[in-house]
Length: 194
Image: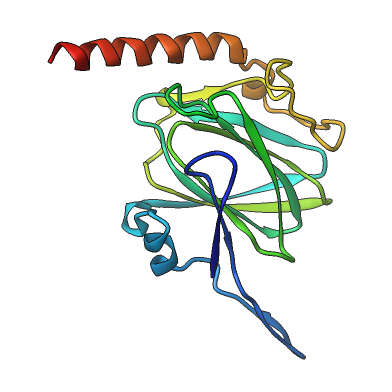
């Protein structure tokens, strides 16, 4: 398995090497050694989840307050347009996004570190996303930012056909950005006083 760094620090792309023959193919979808070598603790993952999404439907942009969560996401069936937004105020790429095509042909997985927002849109009639997550879900920590926020400027490839009520009512990046910068400054001044 090959690991590639991306433009956003800590966001990694895992590329498996499938073995193909007349039957089809066999591929490793996760490799603990490759994860460890890339700085990802494989023992930290506590939950595996899967979603099925119809063409044009969009999920995101989602994140968590508090300690956040890291996740490893892949598409096991179909194809997804996957987006990661850096929401870490101390990061040199704060507020920037990067996009990936995850599909069942190339079988790439994207590792999304804590402090980033994530979302995707299904590009095929049906697409299944598999998530490996390092924190148990707590709905009280959920946060969402509008998928079409003009300050982020994400160019989604298809017209959006379906959104959840949560995503329709999501907040603006500008508001979250102010909150995150304020929290980061407060944490920095506390650390300086120690």
